[in-house]
Amino acid sequence: MKKKNILIVDDDPIMRKSLEKALYLQKGYTVVTAVDGRDAMSKINQKFFDLVITDMKMPGIGGLELLLKLKDLHAETTVIVMTAYGTVNTAVTAMKNGAYDYLMKPFSVDEVEVVVQRAMEHRKVLSENRYLREEIGAEYNFGNIVGKSTQMQYIYDLIKKVSLSDATVLIQGESGTGKELVARALHYNSLRKNGPFIKVNCAALASSLLESELFGHEKGAFTNAYAKRLGRFELADKGTLFLDEISEMENSLQSKLLRVLQEGEFDRVGGSATIKTDVRIIATTNRNLSKEVSNHKFREDLYYRLNVIPIVLPSLRQRKEDILLLAEHFLDKYNRKNGKKISSISRETLDCMFNYNWPGNVRELENTLERAVVLSSGNEILMEHLLFAPAESKQPFCVPQESFALPVNRIKNMRETVKNADSTVFSLYEIEKKAIFSALHKCNHNKTKAAQLLGITVRTLRNKLKTFSQCIA
Image (cartoon, rainbow, N blue to C red; front, side):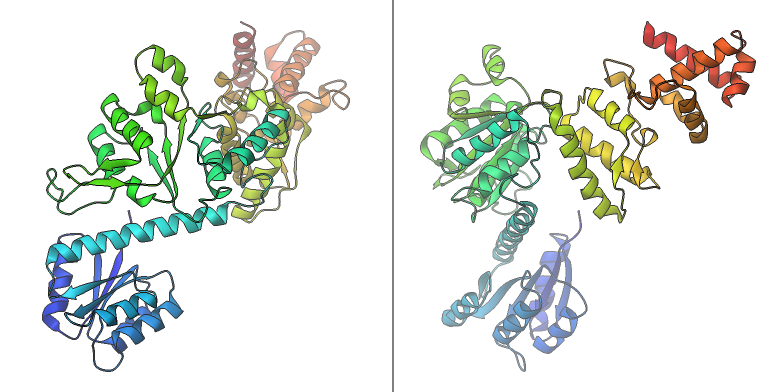
């Protein structure tokens, strides 16, 4: 993870050194210091800082003037001001002009650490929300959710209706079907759209870490808890908390989550104060939660609390009419990303895509198109750009891996040997098979002569025949 850059501005050398030591040595930030406002502006013009901590009273350019100049240059930089006791009004003025928080001198190292950590978490939330708002796109297809099938039309209508409520939503579907995109669409089409959208991956953290992540902890609550930490429930206040892969949450945490859903309150780890929160919960799972309940792997009461509004996303194989629309969407996306101008996908490539089972769903289709765009040097996506793994398919309709040793020009020659190739859509697998057996027939099954006729080696021919026999078996 990239280190955060902090600029400390103070004309007192002892204060600069103390803050630098506290934040660099103990917290691992990249820290730069400036002796006054003019020095700070010089450094700000040379480098971006995530956080600026500045004294208010300095010779020349003071803290308030520095704040105003900085917000004009880099509005996204977070600012904390330092002021002496008895000048709170100055700090309030600074906050009205864009400062995030203030430190009242004299202050302890612990106070600095807490305020800085809070400021960094605030930055993360703002950055995430800004990114997601940019990502949302047209209202009809809800950002990157693409599809015109009957199943997707139903999902669109459901999102529109559910977005207007604060009801808890459980999104179910296989991996790669777009559960997170639906969760984001629900949030950004809701009355909470100006609030934070906070994501927690329940499968990525151990139970003890997940508890602290969700509810936060007090200083000293456990080993290495050097400062108070705000949990995701606090950060998501007035917004949406997205619990990804909720089925992976352990039973002990499920009961604590149930309390938040029922009462809207929780306790930090190691804390005694009850904290109220106003959060909408959207959860996802790629498992059948009702079966998990039957198998006593998920709490029944929590399941019913989460499953107020169920949304079940179809797999890609259940809505194959959307493949062409999705392919065009991803082709345009990765053309722009890679600076290319690929304008079409060949008929046989589309045939292969429509026949493929897509076990990885939309995510696999996107990865396949990105790879194809990168590999293509022309203006069309061809079969050799797909690189499917045929073991994932129920039928041998795509290019076996051995086929990639075959020169592209020989593949084109093979196509010419297949009768009715212009009137019938063949996959490359079928074209190769027909061409090879046609050549063997012409050469009275002499493999050496058939290989010469096809322009391939005898070894390649034998590998092809072996592949065909395995597929038939």
